[in-house]
Length: 125
Image 1: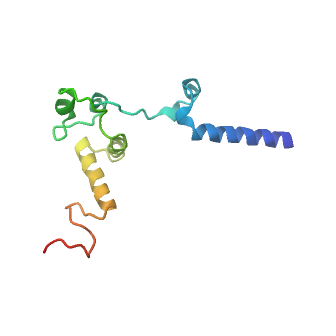
Image 2: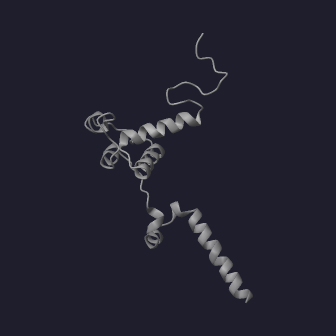
Image 3: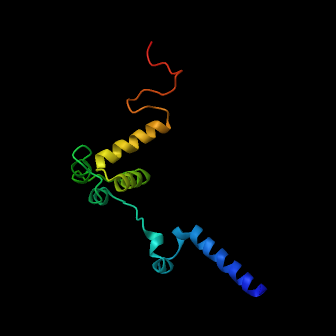
């Protein structure tokens, strides 16, 4: 009985360690667990444009791709947040950017019009 408990403990610790360090696992091991690799970073402007992260108001196709911009692309965390908002709330790219921007403003104590929410803030002299 003690043998089986210790075997179970070793197996559980192996699973926890492999989950914790899943980003550094070899590709052979990752092939057995396809749900661990559901997110692949969008590394370039063209990848991000193909993913729907472009619009007439925020045109990375003509402004960045056509001009041969050598930068890596948009911020990975921001693009993932925008994609999550687009998926969850079923809105287009511009609306998702606005929702994310308003969320950032709210976290910093600013209302959507740009005025601070702090009652002690001096807004005019």
